[in-house]
Every structure is written in C-alpha cells, then in structure tokens.
Image 1 (tube, rainbow, N blue to C red):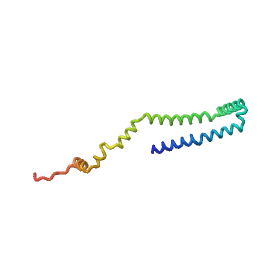
Image 2: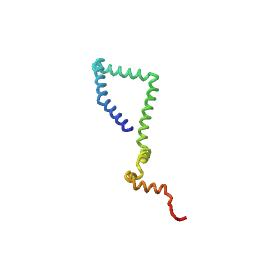
Image 3: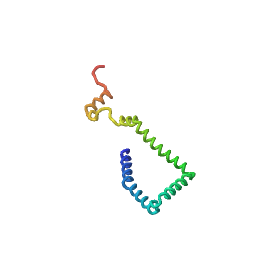
Image 4: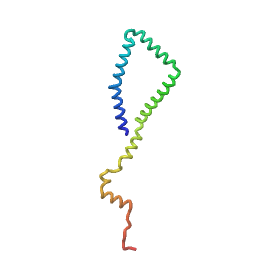
Length: 128
C-alpha cells in the first residue's frame, strides 16, 4: 500500500509542477498587467506592502499561521523519524522472510522428516 501512495504523491507533484504552476504564473502575469503593476512599480510595491501590513494586523492570522506551521512541522518530523528508525522496517522484513529456503520447506522428504521429529510415533515391538 505504501508503494501506491508514493506513486500517487509523485503523480500529484508532477501534475502541479507541469500544469498548475505554469497556469497560475500566466494568470498572475495577466492580472498584474491589467492592474498596472508594470507601469508604476513604486506605487505597486507600496500597495503590496500595505496589503501585507493590513494582513499582518488581523488577529486570527497569527493563530492560524502557528497552527498550520505546527502541523507541517509535525508532518516533517514524523517523516524524518520514520526515515531514521529503520529497526521497525527490519523487524517487518524478518517477519516476512522464511527461516529456511522455500524449496527445502516444500520438499516432501523434509516435511516427512520434520513431522516425524515433531510427532514421534510409538513403535510396536514384541518386547514387553
């Protein structure tokens, strides 16, 4: 299941890289030309800085930024710790790996020998 999620992640990254980001850049260029950002760059810079200043004064912005930043930092830390902790992955591999070769396990002769060792049959003899 993990391999499927990795493929889905790479497909999403490729989609955003090749399709969404270039379209967004062209849209922003067209928007900047219509507003007139290229005609008056100083006034445009002042308007952008005033917008960020008014945005920074909003009371809910800091809380939202801290919550989202903490969430992203937690995701990165979880990924990092999973990459550093290889002992669990090795334990899972050891659970899956058979203790001896499959050919030997499937051979009838070894199965009969193993069964005779595990469950010894009583011997019938004439001795009392």
